[in-house]
Image 1 (cartoon, rainbow, N blue to C red):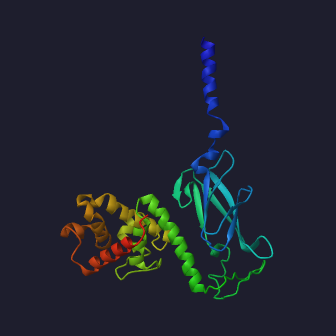
Image 2 (image 1 turned 60 degrees about the vertical axis):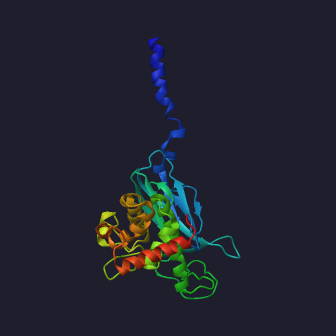
Image 3 (image 1 turned 90 degrees about the vertical axis):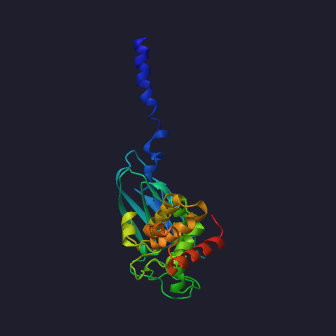
Length: 297
């Protein structure tokens, strides 16, 4: 009897070592790639694995192989465009990134991953700074000094590229912090008109016009980074709507939360509602008008 019990105890640990429960399927073994280039496909290789393709403006989650996922890894990325005469044409320089996996999972636009990176066309054309303002539709092979977009000036291309990236961030922040996409969009539109480099005369910065104290409070280290700014602003707005405003009647919570976002919580508490400042009242009216005229998601 004792012999049988001993064999059973030895057998149980071996069941947990099946390949289906290895670290390869752990969320921490995933690398997230955000392709913020609306014109290129990205070919991504990690540690010499078979390459994966991440489409234009898309995100991809790539699994690391092997039992040891923590430590140093090498990522190789190439950018391609589709041409009329061949399947793909590599453009710009290939990029090699050496990164370190800590084993801790983190949230990203690509989901729960251990490490992630967003790529833009500047990663592959660092010497250009921006697309030239041309209206031709051609691309040169290697040694390519430029990439040309059909029918788009530099200003129009830059504006569309940035807005597409911001929309992705808004959707991600909306799900994470339970704020409707239409509301976040309305706040950004009124606060900065989608200008990630906007600075107010009072020192508020970025898309959601975060003050230095708000940045410190919600962990925003780079207020001009669209991702950090949108996440910090969404986190603050979520706090106001889902926690702070519960002392007020339900039908006034959104209105008072927006007033607090603009003028500060103490001002709303002091006046028992929207402060009697024309700037704040105008702000609340504008945001609510845009929000209610949009489809709520």
